[in-house]
Length: 239
Image 1 (cartoon, rainbow, N blue to C red):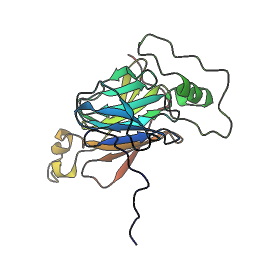
Image 2 (spheres, rainbow, N blue to C red; image 1 turned 30 degrees about the vertical axis):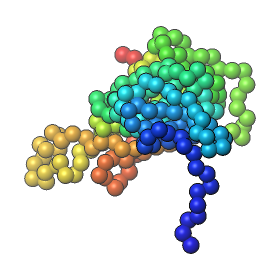
Image 3 (cartoon, helix red, strand yellow; image 1 turned 135 degrees about the vertical axis):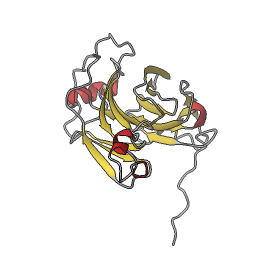
Image 4 (cartoon, rainbow, N blue to C red; image 1 turned 90 degrees about the vertical axis):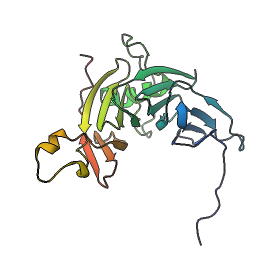
């Protein structure tokens, strides 16, 4: 027999859905679409599709990440920006623009090397939108020993059509390239070594952060292979 019917259906968006993310419970769903459409939907709303709109992007929202507690959200868009959102206040607290072309993928990264205190702080308070503000203090209580480490620190990883993966420190907006994809095979001529240097990097279509091993896996358009790069321990410098 083929797969059965869907367990549930939710009218979450007003147009096509290009990106989707959920919190740890699955009760909150972040939905991205064309024209900068970004909504947070309550999956418990019995199919009513109740939600809140988050306005700021001007083009397709290509990638989303929602913190396990549902208090913070990351979005990447074809408008070349990556945004950090305070879900409770329904506002954008940081606009980042490290890319020279569309931003197609985004993932959280544990700034400062992660750890229990950093993970707990990330789940409680978003980083300040002001570059000069100090990071929020860590709370007195650490997560239970059984709780997995959280990648939600002050840093994030993003990739895009420009073929570059950036690690960005949100409070200072400092960014550094941690990976550059090789050119597409179709753009490299076997008879000319100069074509390799002249060819543009392949567009990054997706990424997955392995913060436990300090790796980022990247997929490129038209390439069946996945490539992994090591993310430096030191955070980006504001210069």
